[in-house]
Amino acid sequence: MQNLNLPPCSLTIKNGLQNKYIFDIIRKKYIVLTPEEWVRQHFVHFLIDYKHYPPSLMRTENGLKLYNTVKRSDIVIYNKNAEAVALVECKAPEVRISQSTFDQIARYNIHFNARILMVTNGIDTYCVKICKERGGYEFVQDIPDYKDI
Image 1 (cartoon, one colour):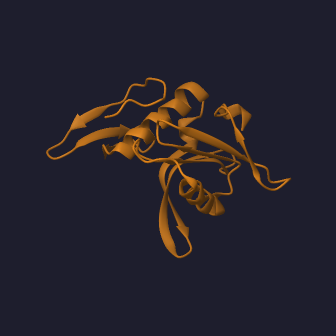
Image 2 (spheres, helix red, strand yellow):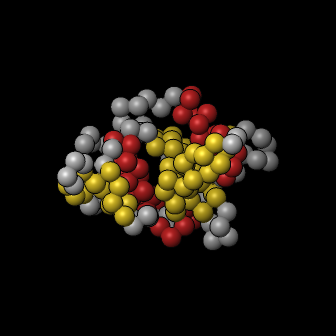
Image 3 (cartoon, one colour):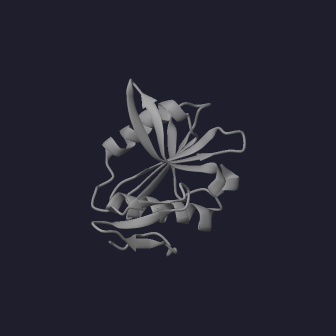
């Protein structure tokens, strides 16, 4: 798998009959290792190990219903009141982060109403803070620590 622009982390990978699998510490099970899953698991570990996000308040591949279709959000972070506070969209490293990536996470956020949106392909990562009182959003330089969201 490709090297990412994320700090090193300890991932558990095993070989299956036809695929490699990576252990998802949030779902507590092995998932087929795809390039997008590689990014998702690295980003989960980054949030936990470097930004102090509590694993117990994170969900990966969380289902949501949007306009009569079922979608899956990559990573959702909740507060202690079970309110979504941050949403992450992960792409494979070879997928360029584009306006359509931001459009996708914005559509998902209609359901979650989170204050922080992050998009990453493991190479490039962007973070947006939603400014509800003013309307609109602003890009932030660094991913905030959990205590700051």
